[in-house]
Image 1: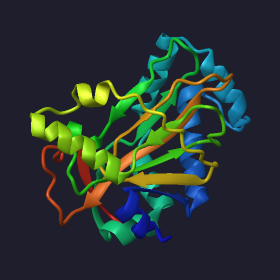
Image 2 (image 1 turned 120 degrees about the horizontal axis):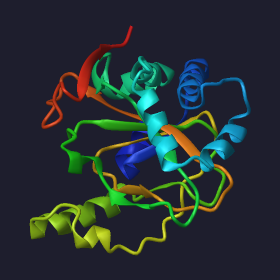
Image 3 (image 1 turned 90 degrees about the vertical axis):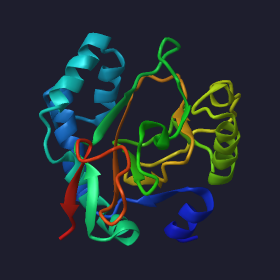
Length: 231
């Protein structure tokens, strides 16, 4: 099934990153900002992160603020997919998100949510990719388009957003397994979240939001998004 067809059918799709060299550069830049070192086995660094305190994690997030070009590298690493969906002229997220998930029962699992909750344009896509294999018992899960839409319509009829219908859901979704070099793309209506997990290793990933310049920005205007043209 082609990527566009999968997006139309399920609302999300997994694909192989086309320019892994650029993605590797992004990964190395992020690792440098977090640990002030490069060249080590990513799993050794993930193990180190799993033992970091909240203060150390916050310091790492602050260090990442000085990383420039992450959004552009994410787009460039998946350029053909992005261009196929949105053309060459885009609005892209000013700062790509680096996501840390730590293992352990004390770590918060993320309840189902969708991007539209934050004023994201309905024409936006989200691109999400891990910096390593996701092969443990936890990870990111997604509800397909049909189930996501049914839940949102039910909420809409009650005039609420992200209310009890979502927060009290008892989901049995299995986290999606991704190999390093794969990414997932989904639309802003897809409910997703992450599970708590048992491991010696933390999870590190990067995500970015983008859309065609021909589509309206809605609430998330140029304070959040910026113009970008694919060469």
